[in-house]
Image 1 (cartoon, rainbow over the protein chains, first blue to last red):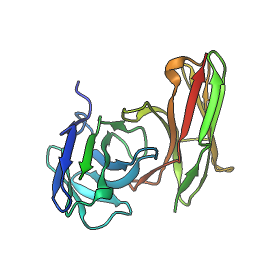
Image 2 (cartoon, chains in turn green, yellow):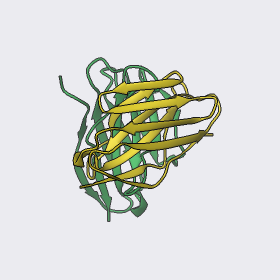
Image 3 (tube, rainbow over the protein chains, first blue to last red):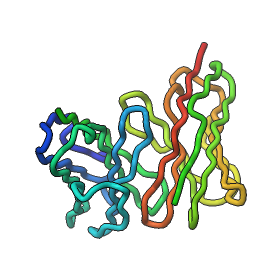
Amino acid sequence: DAGVTQSPTHLIKTRGQHVTLRCSPISGHKSVSWYQQVLGQGPQFIFQYYEKEERGRGNFPDRFSARQFPNYSSELNVNALLLGDSALFLCASSLEQGMGYTFGSGTRLTVV
Amino acid sequence: GQSLEQPSEVTAVEGAIVQINCTYQTSGFYGLSWYQQHDGGAPTFLSYNGLDGLEETGRFSSFLSRSDSYGYLLLQELQMKDTAAYFCAGARGYQKVTFGTGTKLQVIP
C-alpha cells in the first residue's frame, strides 16, 4: 500500500509567482494536514482538512490556501511568493484526529 | 494557545538510555505524539499517548502526565541510527497539531 505521496519533490520559483503543491493520502485516510518546516525548526501547522472541509488553520497569511477533493487528495496553493516562503512543505494524513500522522516526503520549495 | 517545550540538544552514548522531555502549556489539549526526523527526511510517527501512563513500542517508550502537562520519550539500547531530531506534538480535536521545539539527539560511539 502506498504511503502519503507528494508532488513535486523539489521546486524553484521566483518571487511573486504562484505555486501549487499536491498530496495524496494513504488509502482510507480522510484527514489531510499541511505543514511548513523551515530548516532547524519544527513543522508549523498550515491547514487541516477532513471530509473535504477545512477543520483547522494555522497562523499563515491569506496567500496560503488549500482544498481537499472527493478522493481525499489535497492541494496547497501559495500566491505572491516571498523569499521567506522557502521551506519544506509536508503533507500528512491520518485516520483519527490528533493521533499518529503519516507524513509524505515533502516538497522542497525554493523561492529566488 | 499551545506551546510545547523540549531541550534543544541531547548527546548520549551508543547502548545507553536517553530521556527526552516535553512540557506543554495549552487548554483543551489531549494526547501527545512523538516523531523522529532524520536530516533531510520527513517526520516519522513513533508513539501516541492518549491517556496518562507509559506506552512501550520496542526500544521506544513514551509517557504522559496530563495533570503535570508533561511527557517524555525514552529511548533504550541507543544505536547510531537513532541520531535524529525528535518532536513531541499535541493536538486539540480536529484542529491544528502543534509540534514542539524539537530535540536534536546525537548518539556517539
